[in-house]
Image 1 (cartoon, helix red, strand yellow):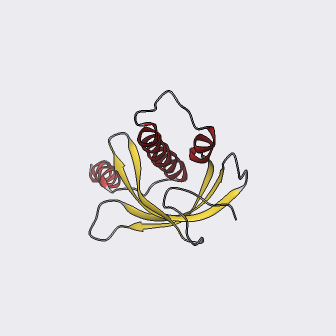
Image 2 (spheres, one colour):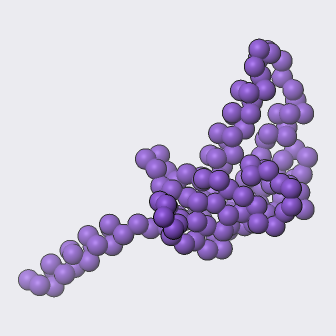
Length: 134
């Protein structure tokens, strides 16, 4: 009788322990973060001139994040979630092969993981929302 209870207890404990995000979670969170940032930039830029489309600005806002390789994650201090360092491979219309290391805090929400305040680790002068070519 004790063995089945111990197994059930172990299953409950492991189900309640927060798990750090997987590489797929990190990829989706960074893609979502950039998509929401780019949408906000588009709304801000359109203003009263919504019918006009600036193709060069649109190309600059388009970032395709292809893959993410997790280097390491650790529990965030005094805040929810995990801080993770990742290697990102991405492309834009102007730079088809971008590779950068990024650090961000990732928090699990009701619709998946969120990337908060991503910033580059290996490039000078980059925006927190872009990945500059190497």
